[in-house]
Amino acid sequence: MFMKNKTQETLSKAACSLLALAMIAGPSFADETATLSIKSIPNVNVRMYGFIENDLINDTKQLVTGSKVVEELDNPTIPKANAATYAGRHGETIDSIRNSRLGFDVTLPKTENGFATEGIFEFDFLGNQAANITPGQTTAAPQTQTERDFFNNATVRVRHAYMNLTYNDAWNAKIGQTWSLLGWQPYYFPSEADVQPNVGQLYRRFSQIRLTNTSKLLDENWTIESAIDAAKPAQLDSALPEGHAGLRLASTKYKAVSGLGSSTPMVGLSLAASAAVIPVRTSGAALAGVAHTNATPDQTGTVVAFDALIPIIPSSDGKSTSNTLALTMEYSNGTGYGGLEVAGATGGLGAPGDGAIGTTGTGPLDSGIAGVSAGGNLDLIHLQTYRGNFTYMWPGSHFANSIGYAETDILNMADFAPAATQILKYQYYYGNVMYLPLTWLRFALEWAQIKNQYNDVANRYAYDNRIQFTTYLTF
Image 1 (tube, rainbow, N blue to C red):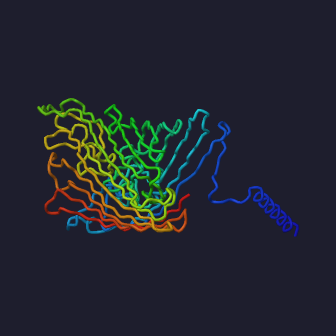
Image 2 (image 1 turned 30 degrees about the vertical axis):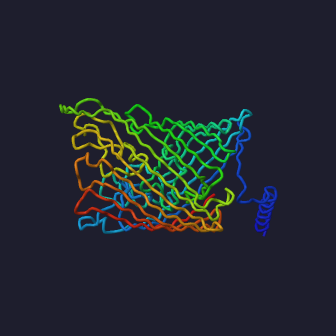
Image 3 (image 1 turned 45 degrees about the vertical axis):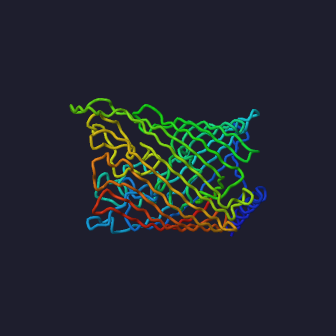
């Protein structure tokens, strides 16, 4: 009896303590900002954000992006549908949470002279740093990757880690890893449920030092941004950074929903141009006694991009997302940016390794940047991409539809020795419907068809049809 009374007394005290704590803390609401105090720097605000995403995906072909099966399409290699290709005659299903995201936005006090400091740290679970094989494969070495571990024990990956420094709202410096300036990412991203990037899309995050100036025009209804940066080299051995520059004219008045996915961005009527310079260096010495008159010199990739967003039905007040229709367009053309800004767009050309070039060698070089030409020299891959999509948000902002088309072309495939595995063109069509019952909850159903055009007369085309159901819980 004594033990029973003692237990009841202990439980009663615990309940009273919890009640008192609840009374002190007061009610909690979802839209309240959570703050964290840092003693060394007063008035620091730390905002946590992100989403939980589940992607249920079915493909009619067994796709391989790079050396593994993943959720994001990139510019994929689609198996040909012939008797010799098992993967071309069988599909696959993925159910994954790896694109879920967690981020921290740290805002520090603004100084009296108008200097503002912000830090962004954002992660997802699409990382995969181990020695990998295709999920489910058990016969190849190293046998360090299973389908179970690949999806269930997802690896954390850094998306963004940068400082955002602003002076008087006119000058801004970004230092660290964030979006590429080429294509003014992410302003012109499509409204897709698929884990981006997809075919023909400029999409890349990397370390950089960027300076941007923003000026207001016409009673502050328009802004013009100019930016320049020095960024992580595409090739470490080039000893030179990549360079990017851009110019963007945007309306602060005429806006519409675009880039709809886990969030609902409102983007203004805008036109943008951007460019990149990508140094690639060879060793400068003949290999194995081979001497050609057309010895491969050092090369520099160059690319230009043009983007536009047109609010066909703009927001009624520049803030409401209801009943808006937007057209987003992007075009790029250049050399040496495949596999960097255009993920997976290698054209079926392997990355040249040191000693593979007949006249001069090259250090480590990622696939998609260059190949070995028919003459045995280093040749930068020449790409052209274009895409366009419509996004319509229905009245009430609970339903949205998007349709789009994209394409990636390899323009100089004739420079390389012909092979049936070479891909001349990637094409992509899609349509979706999204349901947003609550601000923090949304569902998306999407169909997409991806098409490869091979340099193979007998088996010219390969297709994949993808159906995806995605759920987002944002916070």
